Length: 96
Image (cartoon, rainbow, N blue to C red; front, side, top):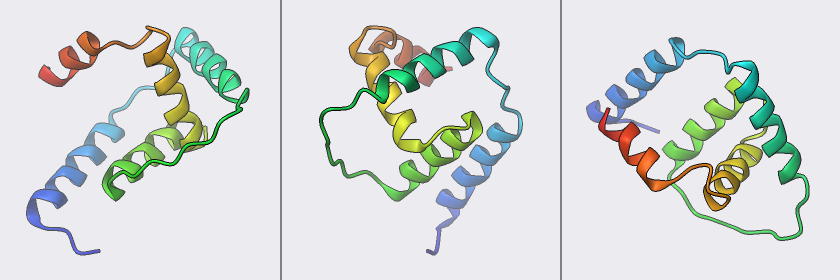
């Protein structure tokens, strides 16, 4: 897939961010493990469409945490619906 200059710049910035990423602390690791365990209790299947770039980014992040990307997606959704991740927090992080 051929990327334009803007897309290439975004990928390079993400690579720089990932190079400086930190390993989750013990509390975060426990939360991620708990979220992953909760996602094993599956009883419904969904299909979603997303950009290949977003999927690749999710896959890289999941790899960094040592989990399948579907588990990461499910854990993010679980945190959102359970109130652990809300729109205000997302908005603050985007403005930084």
